[in-house]
Image (cartoon, rainbow, N blue to C red; front, side, top):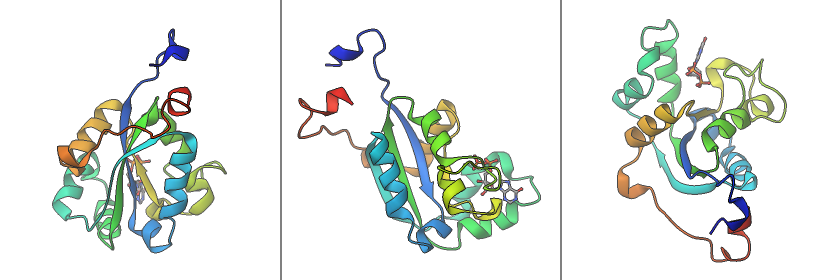
Length: 162
Ligand code: IDP
């Protein structure tokens, strides 16, 4: 396995991506999923859910004292979210780049936020920002058995060579 990467083996890193309520309501789920598939990442967890204020308080524990926190809670609980776990080489760093700047006005074209949003209070998507954050958030949003390990049917042709 990974014979073509002998000096730089790919890392099996995982991250949490959440399509926020505005993304679900605006029918952006498919296009966001498509970007991660197209990049070559592997989907290892996926569900639609209504977030509780308690889970959100844990997820955004570092923002609880911010003046915008009440609005953030209202936003994030305004409808269902799609929660995903994606796996692949440097997926945490790459997905932050794919998602773009927190403030869509600063986000580059080609990023999810830069292509689909205008305002920081409706910025469509969440992506974990560090290995520690990704681990913490995956454990918060997913039960262990909801994250699956699986192989490509064509792994001997393509998947090893991605
Ligand atoms: P991130 O989502 O890019 O990691 P954070 O600073 O962790 O950015 O902020 C979390 C979320 O809080 C943002 O994605 C956005 O939805 C919301 N947020 C951040 N700053 C503001 C603000 O100044 N006004 C309103 N909402 C904000």
